Amino acid sequence: MAVAPEDAPRPNEQELPAVEHYFGDRAGLAQRYVGHLASTGIERGLLGPREIPILWSRHVLNCAALADVMPEGALVADVGSGAGLPGIVLALARPDLTLVLIEPLQRRCQWLDEVIEDLGLSERVDVVQARAEQMAETLDVDVVTARAVTAMRQLVPLTLPLMRGGGELIALKGRSAAAEVEKAAKVIRKYKGRDVRIETVGEEWLAEPSTVVRIVVDPR
Image (tube, rainbow, N blue to C red; front, top):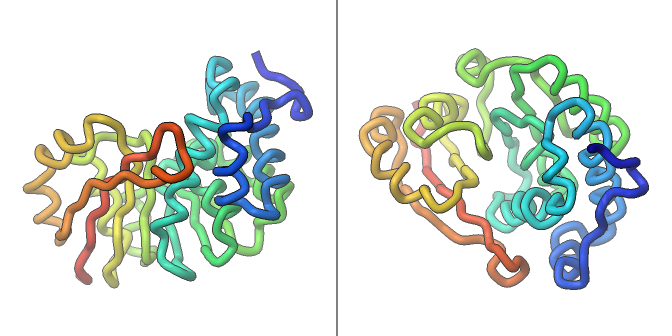
């Protein structure tokens, strides 16, 4: 079950160096965000209660590792943002980024808006209630992120069109990354993707480094 924000888990001794590295003087805001996840995030069904003990390791720090590969000053779209993972985490870790969180469910968008306002991120983080495919003709960003949305073969058509002027998809994936990329080869070419890489990020800081799939997108 959900816990009060003040009772949300705090990073352990092994996680503290990573928290300091990725969030610096914004570590307090990151803890406040974890408080939202552990309380109203659970109550409203954005995460399951079993996730509470691993909010830092499996969720927040897993997403924070993306900060190491984000280009300076980028406009980023987070597709299927859900509980703001990785969108809100990136906003906290990288104050130079501007983000658009794309989420189709109204109740999740409402929660995201509340959390963004509470964390003081409203000036550079917007929430759009829509499906990614609905944004292809109106949005043109530098980077698209996604986590736990769908397999690469389905993710590519949803994300690559959001970078009409060219850019890069940076998707958090797990052990199936290589198999997913192989199955998506044709659709990646169809949507002008190239230079596909599977990388491990956060190795210096995380006990379980994050796996990302990176795809460069040519302008349409």
